[in-house]
Every structure is written in C-alpha cells, then in structure tokens.
Image 1 (cartoon, chains in turn brown, green):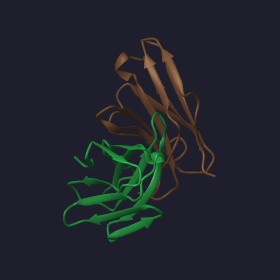
Image 2 (spheres, chains in turn brown, orange; image 1 turned 90 degrees about the vertical axis):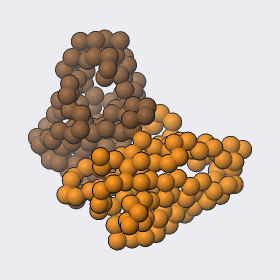
Image 3 (cartoon, chains in turn green, brown; image 1 turned 60 degrees about the vertical axis):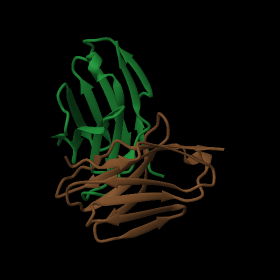
Image 4 (cartoon, chains in turn brown, cyan; image 1 turned 120 degrees about the vertical axis):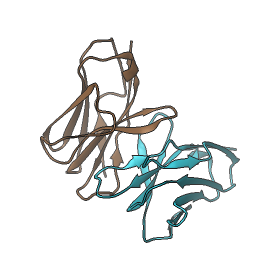
Length: 113
Length: 111
C-alpha cells in the first residue's frame, strides 16, 4: 500500500527558529512536492523535486528551502520561521511522468508564535 | 491563473441525496483530477480524467469533463455521512510537472 509519512502532525515553534519538516515515501517515486494550505487559498506549491539533489521552485518559495539527499526523503526547511508561515504543510509524491496521481502525507500543522 | 475554481464553496445535503460540485478553469488541460480531504488530513486521489475523455465512473463517483466549456463536475450519488469532506479539483496543464489545485468545495452530509 502506498505510504507517505510526515515527521510531525503538530508543531509549535517560535519566531526566528529554524524548522525542519520531513517527508518520507516508500513507493520509490521520483517526484516529491511540498505544499502549504491556508483557508481560502487552497493548496499552494512551495517546492518540488524530480530527482535526488534536484529541486525546483514552486509558486511561493520565499522563506523556504528544501533538501533531497535520498530518493525517499524530502525535507522542507524554514530558515527563520515567521508568524506568516503558520499553516498546514502537506507533502506529496508521484511516480515519474507528468500529470499522474499524487499521493499525500497526513500533513503537519505548524504554529509559529 | 491556471487554478481551477470550485463551485459551490460549501454544500450541505442529507444522507442519501446526490451531491454535485463543479470545477471551472481558464487554460487548456492535459488532465483534471479530483481529490478528497477529510478534516485536518492529507488529500486522497479520487479520479483522473484526461482531456480526451468525457466521463468516468468509480463506484458512487461520476466525473464529467467538458473541454469546450472548460468545466468538470463531480457527482457523488447516494451520499453518506462518511462523504463529509472537502473536495478539490487539480489541473495538469502544458508540460508542467506539477498540479494546480483549486480552493475546494466543503461538503457536509447530515443524517
């Protein structure tokens, strides 16, 4: 069965802290994605990766960076957390080939105080 | 914008009734996908319909696509309380590797 896991369901951090959100998939998928979800704005793509050590900016990359050292793991990094980064963060993976089904993790709800 | 727009934003029906939600978009698409999200959880893929297809079924779900009107609809027949969730359409356009999601329709099914 397809599985995408995220390191935390809930996270509380202080402004200025460095925050790591981790995502692991066990399906040997080439593509991995990080979204944030905010009320009224839907899902917005932050970064995605189509191969190990490869990354591309999504629609809202400012304030974020990513790391993909292994195929199964895709990390989202908030270098210096700010209150406007309080959000639900969703990781997804997809096999090779554009436009196919994405598989989502359960999400991490991040609160930055 | 390449984002799909769902309509209505919210829908409340009684168990056993049918639920219809719509997605309109402005650009040409390769395929359109529907996802469900239970409260506070990740999204689950429901159906993918390609631009050369007009209708697809999966269990109680029926999806139609009208590329001339740039719109799609998701019909859930004989709804159940467990269908209570938000439903999103997602567009795959051009050669992009990514999907663009709409803002969703919140469906409430009451007993």
